[in-house]
Image (tube, rainbow, N blue to C red; front, side, top):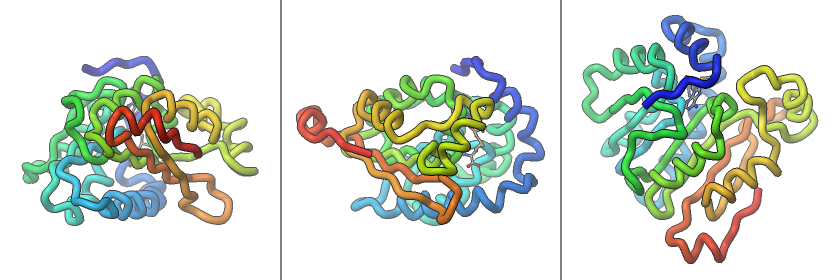
Length: 221
Ligand SMILES: C[S@@+](CC[C@H](N)C(=O)[O-])C[C@H]1O[C@@H](n2cnc3c(N)ncnc32)[C@H](O)[C@@H]1O
């Protein structure tokens, strides 16, 4: 079920047919690579991975040769983006694509081992509801890998103050900590993907293995 609250989704819809030819794609590829490595770094290979705000499916394309047994699911509210992704994966039965926002995922409870999202989180209208939704669909001890601009450090604070018109703005560490904790993640950590300057981080958050562990070990950013 798609809900359209924000002009961003319409803009991505319009952009979808030329999106892959945009100048930012090379840069996005540099963000996708460490996310792919992090997906593959789990103790057991994932059986199901969902990419939230998958766009035209570039991250799923990079994942496909690395996680050869997993079902790969892409979710995006922009119908045009999903249409391009469907063309990309027309001959790939392992890839499923859905038009949906991150806060209303068409997935069963505890059905996903890893959720990824790259450069999309700052566009989500309902980040709190979306993170709760991610916890709902993650299997116990499942992981969220979230790569995005954060308002941390000198450049992060500048981007945070100047970038309010872009998406819903960039979160700082304290805000993201609260969002992850309140959503029900039990532990999380972050690392900067580029140095120096660009405040793009990869945040890895884990769903608790069981409800008792969640209460016992709250995480910190
Ligand atoms: C900058 S693009 C990034 C696309 C892709 N993740 C990549 O790395 O190339 C941001 C994407 O987030 C999607 N988006 C916007 N709001 C969303 C929401 N509430 N839930 C999920 N995705 C959303 C947009 O439609 C768009 O495709």
